[in-house]
Image (cartoon, rainbow, N blue to C red):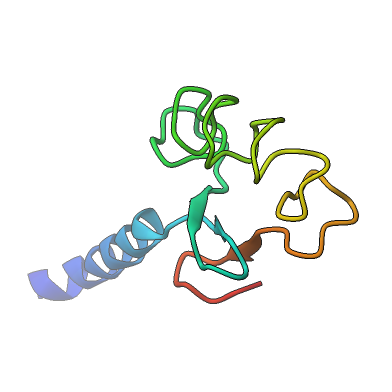
Length: 100
C-alpha cells in the first residue's frame, strides 16, 4: 500500500529529471557542421552565445556570432546570422540534434 502512494511521486521525479536534462537548441555551420554555441540566455553557461566571456558569446572570439569582425558575426559575412543576405547562416539544431 505504501508503494502505491509513492508511485505518483516517482513518476513526477522521472518527468522532472527529463526536463532538467533537456539541452537548449544550438547553432552549427550549415556546410561544415562546426558547433557554434547554445542558444541560451544563460550568461553563466560556458557554451552559451549569451556568455560575454565564453568562446561562443565573446565579441572577440572567432567562433562567436557576437564578434562584429568575425566570420560568424560580421554583417558582411556569408556565414553570419547578422547578414540578411547570407546564403550560409548557422543552422539551429534542437537539443537532440535534429535541425529546425
